[in-house]
Image (cartoon, rainbow, N blue to C red; front, side, top):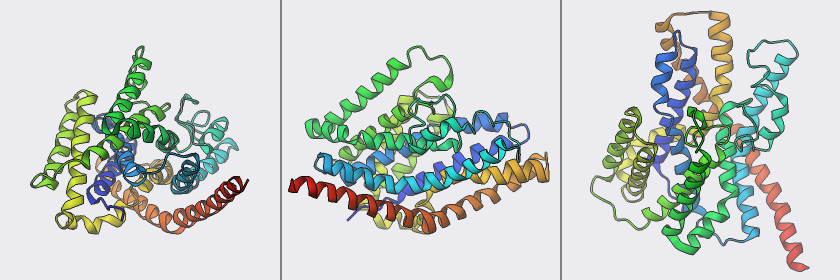
Length: 365
């Protein structure tokens, strides 16, 4: 039976909500101070990928590392993330077409809505360093990085098979060393591996592998007393580190400790995290909240706030913000139920049937 990690779900939802508030805050009157405040918390994005590596490894870490299993694994993961990517991307494609046809206006027409970047977005390679700008649904770089991590999963399995936790630790160290070498000439903030978006696939690979390592470590530990509250306390330490400008490796290490404690708490103290259960339906669509909020931003801010209301009042801005945030959550819930799950199931069923037929034909031959 697959473990249900309540703390993971709530923390991912918290991160998604903070990222959404960060992007919405760019529309505030005099946005610079509040945007700078939110930017202290950008390492929260890494928490998504570390937890993803943890959960994927827990579910697939004992999978036999064969080409057939690899194909079936990729089909399952693609069917999980691609419907959400496709539906949110299509909104920006439609908007971009309207801009290029002169029906709408946008200052980002030649960059964000550059249709030469559309194939990379459709293939989920836009965060592999193939583009110099974030295009269309700008937060989808995270899905591109996640897909890259899935493609590298056989390497994670190989490292584990060869050296268990030590093998995974060496893999993480190797990836980070390569990233640091690539960063050797970096001068601007977003040129460094832990801040980059346009070549974030390699950053995600490091986070994902770190998550797999934490999963193995967790399986070897005993649960300390009051584990849940220790986890929350360390998460508080993460926020303190982010706002104090601590070294990125200290921040990520604290993330690792918090995630291990959260996993231990949910594995053995389910009754103590039961108070989080009412939040879980929304927590389950945290990635949907993350991917949908730029779409809602188009309508709620670029259109309604700036062009229809035309208000420049800072108090009214913060009074208004909860409305698009609630709409985003509602859209994410409906999208997951009405579109992503049925379309994902269709993709998985169709591709799995084709893959199994080819496997069977090869075996018979």
